[in-house]
Length: 167
View: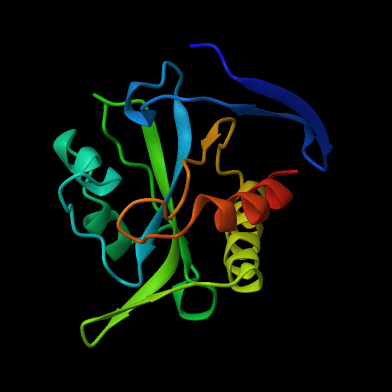
């Protein structure tokens, strides 16, 4: 699989490569140490036509992983990182999740400003820093376009905070 764009950046953990692909993340041809997902707050149902449903179809229950995560910062930052999936039939080792939206009383509360998104995404990357400090392997972190499905977050709104934090 050939990336559309690749660049390298220096980090405290050594040089890192950022690549952009246009593909189905489940068909990615490399091991993914952490697959980043977004969710409604405390909702991990395998709804049709979602990444959670696709993961469920290959035997990964995001709901089960969320019940006993390795790192759980949901109360304060709305992010968590799963333990190893231990799924020998897939190339996805862990799930990282950002809860970008809330659903209350039949109403969708979509995060609709850049600062709120930036705070959520910054918290996610800080959680990854904590995980790296404690030796959690993350050579490849996949970050699909977050919130673009049922959460209805505009790609224009999500791209800047994601790229800013990646760099």
